[in-house]
Each structure stands twice: as C-alpha cells, then as structure tokens.
Length: 157
Image (cartoon, rainbow, N blue to C red; front, side):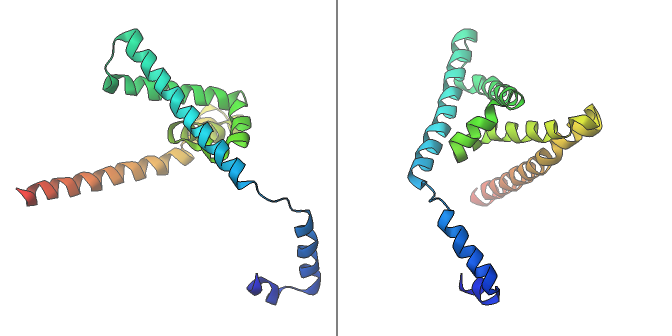
C-alpha cells in the first residue's frame, strides 16, 4: 500500500483507514470448502446423468458423454433462466464455474440481459459475445496441438 499512500491525500488515507475497520475478513477456508463441494457436486451430477444415459439407452461411456454434456448445458441454462444458478453461484463461488455449466450460465446470462432488443439482434448476438472468443481459442488451440502432434509423429518415425 506504500505507493498508493504516497500519492493519496490525508483525507483519502483517513477514509481508507475508516473503511478498513468495517471490512469483514474473507472466510477463505469456508469459501474453499463450498467451492470444492459445489464443483464436485456438479461433476457428480454429470456422472449420474452419464450413468442414466448408459443404463437407459445401453450406451458405452464414450457415446454417453455427448448427451451428458448436452443435458448439463440444458439444465444450466434452465437454472440460469429461473434465477437458481445465480443463487447457487453466490453460495458456491468458484465451484459454480465448472467448465460446461459455468460456460452455459455465462452465455445464457449474456443473452438474457439483451432480450429486450429482440431475438436476433439482442439474445442471439449477445449470447455469442462470450462464446465466440472461447470457440475461436478452442479451435486455434486444437489446431496447434494437432499440428505439433503430427509433426512429432513425422519426426519420431
């Protein structure tokens, strides 16, 4: 805080000291446990859904993984639309950001914010504001990894 204090006025320093007396300590242990169990619970839900797909439709684990991801995305978007995912996220913290459900929540939240602008110009375009860069990065990263793997295979043989 030294660089900040050297440029701040006495009033700003006094204000910062006053505010610090009211600031609550962050319960890191509790937040970490909540995050761990919430993220684990979402992953457990995914395993249960995959087991249901495997049992009901007699799929092998690899085949059941795609409908499992789709089911988790649909459940996450539904929970976001109903306002349940926001409350879960407040309680779970980083545990609610498990990749598939957290990504679906971010897309649905962005789409819901702009629904008053219409289906295409509002909801659809805003939904891909976040998804576009993520998908572009994913495709680019997959290409680079595949290229490295192919070059490694050629070099090793």
